Image (cartoon, rainbow, N blue to C red; front, side):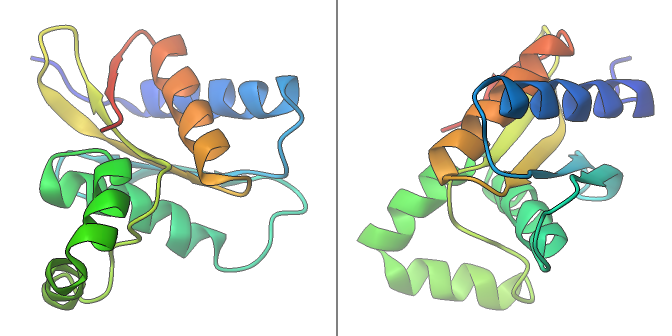
Length: 143
């Protein structure tokens, strides 16, 4: 049975930070949630601003909530703002609909959780998330 272990979650974070350093991103904050939306691991780089935990976890939570990466949520918020308002209302305001929330899957495609990253541009946040997931030997679903 495949599951998102703490070791894998920490590997995702470590690799995401490495990607951020490689391409000179601003300080990142990474939240890794299991498939049930529970926090598995979290780290915030020195210099990251406040509310970064809430943003990172909101990106990951949103991806899990709809079964799509948060890039899909971003596009949907533009096209159907009433849907996004309703979704955020029923989630208790937990969803942050911008890129940077990426689903984590095992080799067979089973959903293991999601990673949410914030700190740089949304595109760079998503790039770091994908890099972290791949480095941990897992598959990603960004959109």
